Image 1 (spheres, rainbow, N blue to C red):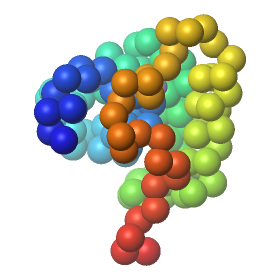
Image 2 (image 1 turned 180 degrees about the horizontal axis):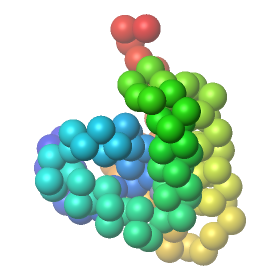
Image 3 (image 1 turned 45 degrees about the vertical axis):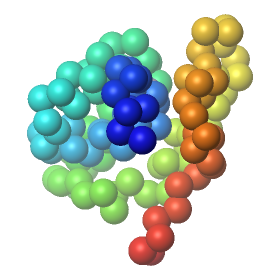
Length: 111
Ligand SMILES: [Zn+2]
């Protein structure tokens, strides 16, 4: 499993979304931060998402993983799907992502 991650140097949007809060709290490792930023550089959707998260922090003063409400996530995933559906044949990060890709919305077993 770790091997698969090593093979994919680029983050896909869902991974980037997972990293947004850590990025804003400056708690990413150097490598993760670099990958996150390089993903943002090529992805207007995640850039927009990050901007939304920043705005949330401005409003609330801080952010925790719990602040990533299901509503925000599903809104983003919806954006992402439209992006996937509406663009060219190159934009298919799932195609070779392995057996556990595309498993749908992630459910936290603890909550
Ligand atoms: Zn993205």
